[in-house]
Amino acid sequence: MPKSIVAATAQGPILVCDEGLSVWGGVDPATGRIIDALHPQHGQGLAGRVVMMPTSRGSCTGSGVLLGLAFAGAAPKALVFREGEDILTLGALVAARLFGHEIAVLRLSGADYDALAGESQAEITPDRLRAGALDWPLTPETAEVQLTAQDRAFLDGAHGAAAQLAMEIITTMAAAQGATELVDVSRVHIDGCIYASPAFLTFARAMADKGGRVRVPTTMNAISVDHANWRAQGVAEDFGLPASQLADAYVEMGARPSFTCAPYLLDDRPSEGEDIAWAESNAVIYANSVLGARTVKHADFMDLCIALTGRAARAGVYLTPNRAPRRILDVTLPEGADDAFWPMLGWLVGQAAPDRIPLIRGLEGSAPSEDDLKALCAAYGTTSASPMLHIAGITPEAELAPAPEADRIAITPADFARLWREFNKGAEKVDLVAFGSPHFSESECAALADLMDGRTVHPEVAAIVTLGRGSLAAITASGVKARLEAAGLTLVPDLCWCSISEPVFPPSAEVLMTNSGKYAHYAPGLSNRAVRFGSLADCAETACIGRAPGVPPRWIDSGAASPAPSGRA
Image (cartoon, rainbow, N blue to C red; front, side):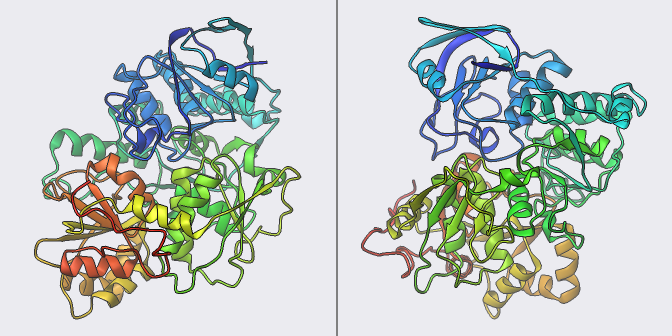
């Protein structure tokens, strides 16, 4: 029977999305238009429509972007999912609970979903869905959540108004997720500190003003400005000030100003089996997959709610059975493959397993570095909604038995050739080389410094590295920072390429190059620039000569790939 997850009254035309959508990075936050250049519904608008998609994918920031769309009058009237979904559901819940903006959220079975997708209009009430000849009752998705005395104390307001509201949101979402209890978490990573719209500051300021204070160690994601230097960099006051105020609101509530999208690079990393609560999609996937810690992909706003209470719903991949692979992917490591293989593989694995945990087989003889795995996990998060993956012989839980219904798919050399063409639509002449999405590690900085030794960045090219404060301090002490700057690279802390804006992003740049599969996916929509993609060595060479390689590397089947076009895409 169709389920009502967030009850509301709504009607409008139906938009069916063939794939999941990351609302952050994939949707214009002012208009609701889909800007993800690789999405099948690119150019369509969400505003005022009943939007159907299998589930969401990508960034945890989608909850805040949805709230911002509601403030801007550009939100969908309703969201209809076929699978479980938390990120946009939470955004709809917060929009209604705190600010009075109603967005209905439904979940349908596969057959009902397909039937509704054939209609053009839908009308939704809290207890009914009507579309054409369809007339279905809606039942609330609820579960009995067992609460401790401490949980009830939060709900009764014993720990203040902010913590009370946080626990109300946690328990409401827990019931919708089918959780029967909550779990203690040891640490939280906040993703909602990115200033994607004024809604983010409105929420954070409201919780801080209610006396919110974190109860467990809490780190913060990359923010939208270099906190100490944004004015000197020429960032406009009407953006830089609220972006820095957003970060300040979380620091005021006790979060650590780590300002990195790669919290696994910090000295105190989670351990295998540790229950944590992280937002930021790449961090969640890395924590689960590579470290063996346990966290679902917490949405923005939920991250703060958990930090204020130390409690999360015991659901999803907090539970061992839910960490089992449901799709087996056969891959062959090409002879001579360079580091570009790993982000490309991550993107392709996500496309092949957009809604389930995969097990990658065939790479048992490889030895990926932590940086390789970081690149793979980040790119995987752009095309899959799943919070983790397994790699046979490499990741700590790869021996988990696949689910009985697990199927099997091969990722072929032709897939890599196709993706290389997709990632290299820009002209060969490059104006900007973007390093650090996610934030560059110390080892990546050192490797880049080695590649740049004795060379300098071309005078018509900007080469920029984004990184966390901790990594910047480490490479300053080691001398790597001085080597990079001597070669003409610019190092920018606190913000990441997925939150960067002009003028820190060079306004005159028309074509950018990156070694990040994540940024190669998002950059066309976020920056409105054409993109080139390649290995770290390719990017360093391009920074020096101003031109990207015109053909794929030798390890990609040259018979299956053709050179990228010479004009700007």
